[in-house]
Length: 469
Image 1 (spheres, rainbow, N blue to C red):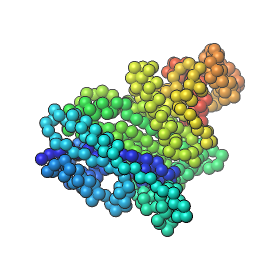
Image 2: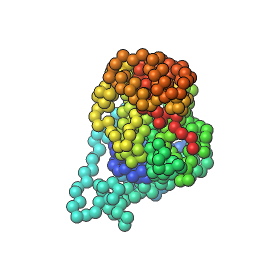
Image 3: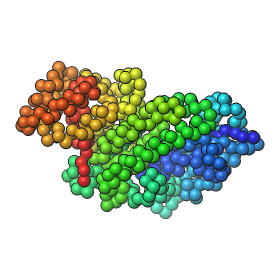
Image 4: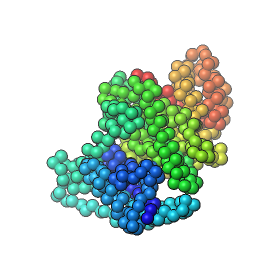
């Protein structure tokens, strides 16, 4: 008999949120990223029997004698197909596998709903492991939690994650670019600028997260396995092409003596998360939305859009907290865009954290406290991103940053602000004697709907255009 089998890794904090070591967290994430593909490989399934394969999950068509038999076969095949180091990592993962008899195509949505409910129930019933205090025994020097079993002071699990993470980073880039490339392994290397200390963005990073708008609903609209497969493959192909185009457009900008300066955390499902040097973050944001403008759902031709969150910060900032902030910003961008336009669309919110600043409170409360009196939209779409990127170099040379601080202070206090007069004062204060900046500033004000344009100009002053090597 033929069964539909869903596989999904859950309770993911254990895999990549328990320490700040980049190789370990990368290894945990990459070990489970393509488990659907890995299980299909272990089962030697025909291409049509791998229905969907997203980030850390998959939907397969498997033959067996019953649901429990299929679940056992799939779990065994997953582990058998994994290389030894990956298998050591997967042994610590919580992977749920559920199967139901396939039935007729018209029942697909109902069958997928049953599988999802079964996985969630199994997840809630799964055991949680509490690590005891070890007292005199050594704990892992990396995760500060598990018993240290290796000579280097690491736990077996974290050592395996680190080894897998170091080896797989190059594989992900090779898959995207179609060729092997040497890559940086640490955020120190990734954020290092060849001009070194004193450069304004040396050792700064950009953490970018894009979350698909209503991808679950779009997948549910697929009525047959073939439609689901086409949707899944379309999303993966679009995202892979984005990274290829981003890194191929001006490859010299992305390389330092240590290798290619990018960290691809996850892609292939409804989420895309990656890290770039700060001076390339705005370019990546712009490129993503340029590409996303062309992305369509198969069959219906409806747009595939993403809410985005971008955080510029120092490379030593706690990376997991920064990723959570980027995720919260993406969610906030969706809600604000929907309130303003009626749909979520391709909009992002960007936050700059200088030094080791943190939001330190609920994101909504922070945004209300800081920007609540400013007229206009904090989320930016492609047009605003383009205006800021295309004109920031000019504005830096023709506008007074000191005067811009005063203008922004007025805007934040809710004081009346005449945009044309504010621009004239910015130009005069600089003494540049030019009015070439007026039109693009007016365009930006129009795009974001008010004085918040001046806030964007100031906050992204060092970041919007970046700097070429």
